[in-house]
Length: 162
Image 1 (cartoon, one colour):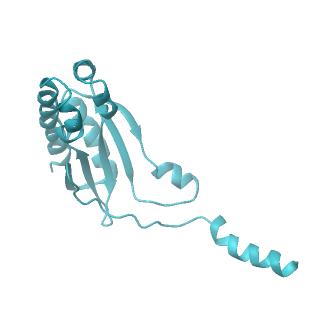
Image 2 (cartoon, helix red, strand yellow):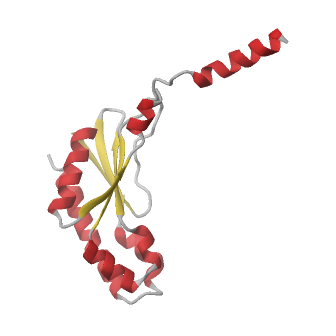
């Protein structure tokens, strides 16, 4: 009985200890994604992205990231933040064109910390997100998506600029 208890304890012990670092891969482009590697560190890129959202006529409406919560559990992971950006004018316009397309609002910008300490800003192009809904919607949905493509490209360019 004591041996069984010790065996279980030995097997369970690593699961209860804090993890010092987790391997997380740098972002690589996927279909429909825009990926902007920068020279900025994670914290700087996060702040620059938030400022660029505002400067380009959108608002930060959501923010979520696992890094701080993981640290509170004793787990270290690279910086990781999802920033949802949109505005009410686009929301009203798009919901009138396609109620299902609104599942993608706000559109997310993804700030990640790379292995070398720099940050990357990524997002899925709005035209890619809304593409599944354009056949069933008025042609204006594709127009709105392309307008958002331009805005998100400007946000990324501003945030990533040196």
